[in-house]
Length: 438
Figure 1 (cartoon, helix red, strand yellow):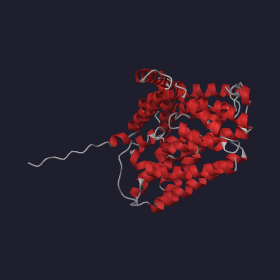
Figure 2 (cartoon, rainbow, N blue to C red):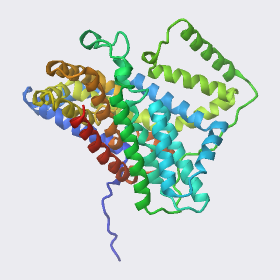
Figure 3 (cartoon, helix red, strand yellow):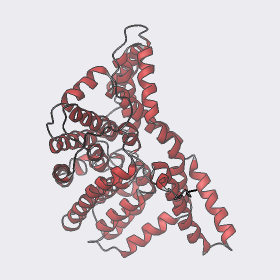
Figure 4 (cartoon, rainbow, N blue to C red):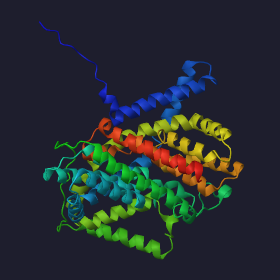
């Protein structure tokens, strides 16, 4: 009788949820080791670390809801029949994988610079549409590459119109106003420095997307993903249309009354409010609205499950003081010339533990600006440096890839090699620009 050979399969650890568990375990080890010097033993250090983790576990509940709403409403808009038809027509344009990669990368990064949530959803859906269009024409394609191109919005967004840190410091009454004042978007988002660096990053990624498509071998293989079938407008029970009119009217009144003034008024809630109104108006019928939203909820399931664990990680490194110790140590090593480079690297690293750009700025921002004041470095430049570090490491952070993975059906281990190439070249480019220009 032949013995069956068994082999341990640990491939499940490469899944997004497996990675967040590994990251949680690694953070626990760091914090416990850091606490040992102040605690009487392992039991006390572990107990304290568990308290930190538990205190942060539910700290992102509001943010979780915000992220789910951005994704769900963005998904609902993308499958609305007129928009879906528009994207489908564009998806038919490429006649080869290199041209398809350029189109997906360019459209995705453009959308990401307008708004990170819109770019995230559009990139996921459009990359799958282009892949399916190529296969229908008998042209070999590679969905993993197109998905990576569709994820590039996450690596350029913080230098765009929805950059959390850059918008925060442009708003009157922000938490650092007493120490750094108000820094308008004209000195950050619309500055010649940012336009040059972010523009160069987009150009670099376009070249890489084309080159990777040239050296990649396409196949005619289909990969199961979410159903992208469009939904048309309904004509019965116009409750959704009535609710949409109500939201748009209240928004218009806010503009007239001066509640919304310029770029400093743009916030995540502002974006969600508009998306909500647009989806209600688009579908008109309450039944069609519910159908579209229910489909979008399926793509937000991973966010619903994993956000509490990232909140726990944030609780571990913030409540324990580990993040502040690392940031202070980094600042102590920096001179006026090297502060920007150290800030860029530290922002990229911390992003793995705190994937929210706004949340990360709330933690790192005061430390960065205090170091900038001490070394007499421009506050606007340091905010941009932080933004570049936060955005580029998203390419290796599986957290924001969750919608893309769900919609396209691509696995993390197949997406990561392409994202790694984009990260290496993007990181090197930004580091060089920061070191020699900023």
